[in-house]
Length: 635
Image (cartoon, rainbow, N blue to C red; front, side, top):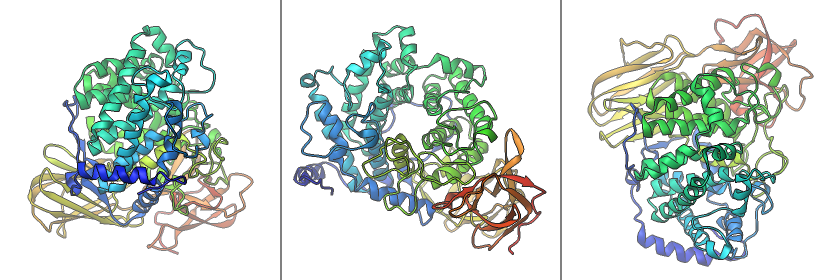
């Protein structure tokens, strides 16, 4: 239960009593999930529903718990403020927010959709009624805002924290206040669809379709050239969410509206595999690519798939740092330009959040291990450490600095400029952060008609209800190189285990017997058999030190051990220039941890997992000298 500073507790308590009569508290795997109305085209593998996977004790679970504490603490009345104020509904005495949800900020009301998604994901995976109740209450209040549009002077269906007139200015090329109106609408719609499909809330569907109808009416009046001009202003993933609505409802009008948001200036070069990303605002583009992937699945039009795959290949191969993040000052730079862009404003969090979503979409069309090599790299080395582990609310850094002597806790000045805060920042990366840390389990496992895919290695429990099987994964990965998968239930199917590209000599055993199967790096190793309860699969993925060089300067590199990027701990004193690391000096301190010692510029330095580089100045990219040791045995 939540309360506000000015006494809305009674209102929400009454609401709880009402919905308590309407929603049954179902057991874990029986979460109310709305089935899609359509079958997707070109999909050969699937990722499990959130309701089927739970994290167990790990750093991932710690991240999740901090975020859960925050989203169950934050005051929904304050989050509702800008909606209510804009739609001429009483604000119930709530305080307004600061940062990017301040009543004067141009694209206020963008972050609330992320909270809706986070609450819905919390319910889906944990059956946490506090999250469910917050989501359904919030949607009910949004419905009241939407219903008051006549009194507010807005068209039917409109829902936002800023005036509808901003869209008129957008359509006429006169919007100069910094707003990105459709970006905000996308976030609200994405949150609504998640509350509908994860919780089964009919109110969310009604509000969503009413808002989508408003988008349809608004865009139907524009010519193709006018729409293309509108899309010169960031519009989030409008093609993505509208294609999703088509998938979940089966109503083809939403596909028509989605395709109005196909941005020719971005799609045309990518369709012919041309890298024209230099200078573009990075996170403006990635949601469009996710939309292209989803439009492919709804139409079968191969051009959409070409756009999405080419974008992924270009970005991961030519625009990404060692940690998997991309962008400098929020923008793409020239292909392979890395060394000159190691600054304090690298790797915006939203970009990686969206790249992981794109990765999931593409993997489903072609379940290749290389997709999850990237997924692991970016999740482990960028997003896991984006959260501040010393903050009980799990606040995040907007940028992850990669400059020499960088330190986490860097964000836009409007909102404090350091870590996100409870009510004073509400940046885009804070919104995607609460989503990321409530769905960390969503891609660990996948399946097709005959196989289980093990994509990621972290302590977790999968309830494969379709086959009556439970898989329990136990590991201390990436500190150790071994994971075990315990099977409960029986049946004949194949287990496909990702063999990362960074390993060699991987071995897989079943019940202590090593299997004679191919374990080629960058592929899935397949065990086909009749399984019985009690079967245990042991996976050993040998790790070694390796370099991840800047694309444009092989003498400048990050050091990784297995999947884990390491960084040097320089305490409170940043080096004056990029240190030169003597590679042969690297030694692991202990097999129970991932701390290494090495010599840089003649001085001993400790290198540790970058995801743990918190509260001190660090070095990720080094000038490198010599060769790595063939073994990095403990000193």
